[in-house]
Image 1: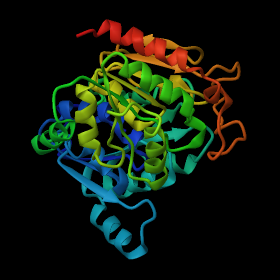
Image 2: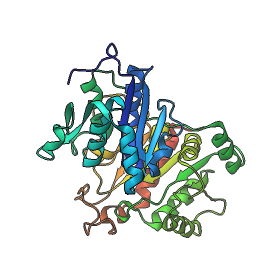
Image 3: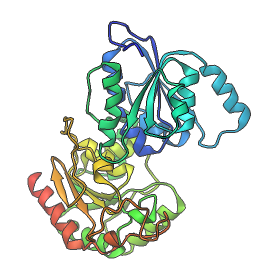
Image 4: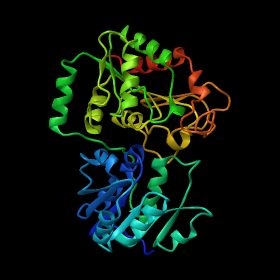
Length: 364
């Protein structure tokens, strides 16, 4: 592919990131890089409907094109027809068949990821293919290799935002300036879950430091039920906001928190990006690839090593207590419904100590 530069500016650009919330959030450094290189271009993003809220307040994006994860044929066909060669440049940030096909249909020039020894046919659909590393390169840095291929400057900020109305709503819910700690206890999958006893002990410890406990979570019934169950063991003044906030409102809430504690979820990535002191609980997940990106980390080096608990800038990453962590598997029984011993055996004292250390740095 002839390298595109700011002097050979594309007028219309499509970024394709049809995956989960965390993937979209960690795509924002590349989006900022593209916007900074070509400030006058029309920049659109193609995402799943369930993740569109991540970019709703992102001023780098001109238009969000949201598609269902499992589209019906005719509406999807109409969308495809509307995309054909509409863009000067299409950027696929995933290795999958569908995003690569979107890029091929939409862009006169196409760039995207291809896994080594997999899907060689995809290379023929792309003007330029970038080799994808799913093990040893952090997701943010992997995405920024697309910026390198485009010949543009890297930007490292994971971006989120909110409107004035969303800020007002969060202020009303908090009902006062009292300092608070945000706990996000429920991950999407069991294999990333800590234990009830740990959350209860952590909440008591933070409450003893005169911090109000705020629970966050999504609207899924199982998540709401879990938050309600924990609420019975938490201090009386605990505020349960699980299922009550948009992604943008959650970002606003996190930006004001004294501290945040959560497992390997998109909300943990969001807290780290806000600059909030963040304790991230990691078990089988690979922190090199998926560790939270600290707000002040602007480097081409991975922020995290694979083994051990670590701290960098505003983030403390606490790894599970078993020698096999991180195994990179989905739980000890190798499926998303199973649990992980490394997290189930992680003592509350270790998490409380990490939280206290971060709070000491950011004392009022």
